[in-house]
Amino acid sequence: MTYREEATKEAPEGTQEASAHKETFSFKTYSEDIKYTQDIKYIRQQAELDYSYLTEFVPEEFIQVVKPFVRPEEAYSLWGKVQVASRRFAPLVKNLLEPAIRAFKASVWAYKMRRVKKSFGAYFWGTLAGILSVEQRRELIRRGESIFNMDTCLLSL
Image (cartoon, rainbow, N blue to C red):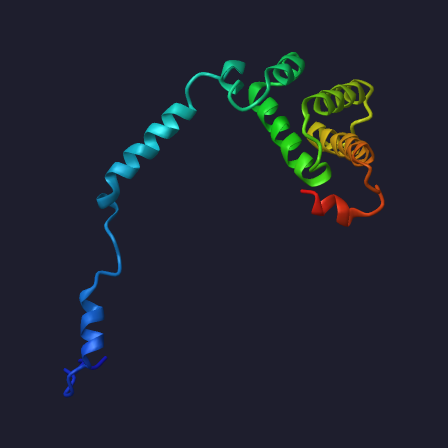
């Protein structure tokens, strides 16, 4: 290999300024972030959560219905499915609790009868979608709107 010779021409100003900026960072600079991350991991590894943590996010009636069947994390996930499904299939329905409980009970019954083939969450989603679609149609009829014209449904949001 040959020795690299010094450049005879000076580099333009822009390249000299760019080389003055540090392109990499030291991992030690973020030690506070690392400590915070370790604290979060410690909190996540602590004792199991119970249902009292859910009361701010999930209605109490729904918790009481699902409590004998699922863990608190799963109850939270199921209520999340209820909220997403309601926005998608029944944006006009205000009371989600009763349809959600009906869908959960129907899903548990199907699971006990071994009708659930894939996962309980997927079956619950399908059941919930069907029940919320019926509730959406009932709400449209109650308002005197056509159930066949989805433009009126979307405009009334």
